[in-house]
Length: 265
Image (cartoon, rainbow, N blue to C red; front, side, top):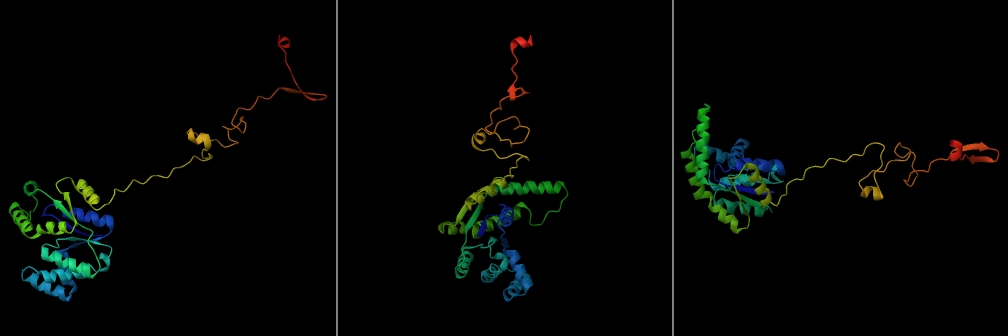
């Protein structure tokens, strides 16, 4: 399964990506992690990216695309991957299409987490206020002004990807403003995945009892085994056995002892 997650900062892409990783056993590929890993590995493309990042410049598309092309062919990505932070622009998306086509691979879907930017800003303001009240350290870029700039950058660069993938029939839009479990359900539905049914505990029969059959099974009753206390005194057909007659020995054999009403008096 090969996916792309789209959405502005704060939309919850990281949370949903991790859930999908755990469920399907695929890997999450973020642009920043791929660039750093390539630099540490010392590949030709990685060394170029490292020099550019050390100067504080943006890594050009051709280098980013080359690193992505190397990464998605590694063994842990053969089962599938989720791209996070790539592609950011339509030219990057077109380059990704060429890479996948050359390697005989296809995207399963592009999931867009649609959110309300105004509510996102209110959320971050509330969170910062709570962190300050607890005396926690706040990152320099973790503030409403920084978020506004990131949202503006997303609208300019990345939002056009929505139309790009919609035309290809790959876009799946979910409501990113609902609770996390509900977002997860919407994503699963968009991917054609059903909820996992609960595992049924195996049924157990009490020891010394056979499974019911025939009419007894239909009536919901169990049939006791012969020789048990419940079957004693019953004929094989299940009817009560006839009472034994009082027998006394006689010359000609065994005769029934008949007690008349007069003799009892």
